[in-house]
Length: 77
Image (cartoon, rainbow, N blue to C red; front, side, top):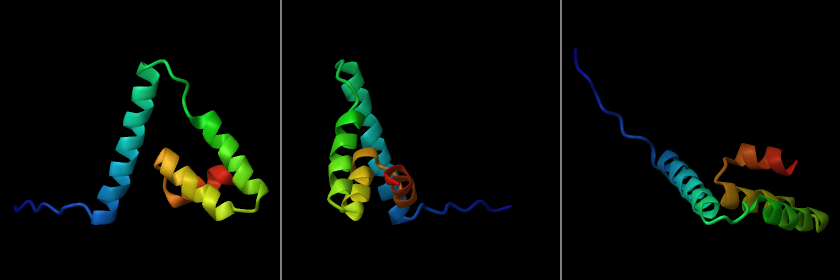
């Protein structure tokens, strides 16, 4: 029996890297006693949506939370 190692795809590594960075950011904020940034992000997202900039809102959500496109779109909707 042979065991083969199949390395993860580059895009998959990028996505996980973003998620790890986001979790590190959240951990750092909580250990410093700072409130999580979600409330501030929501205010920015609301402004973008009021201006009709849905794509920008989804993009910003992905940047802040490290989510996939689908997750960010569902959050913005």
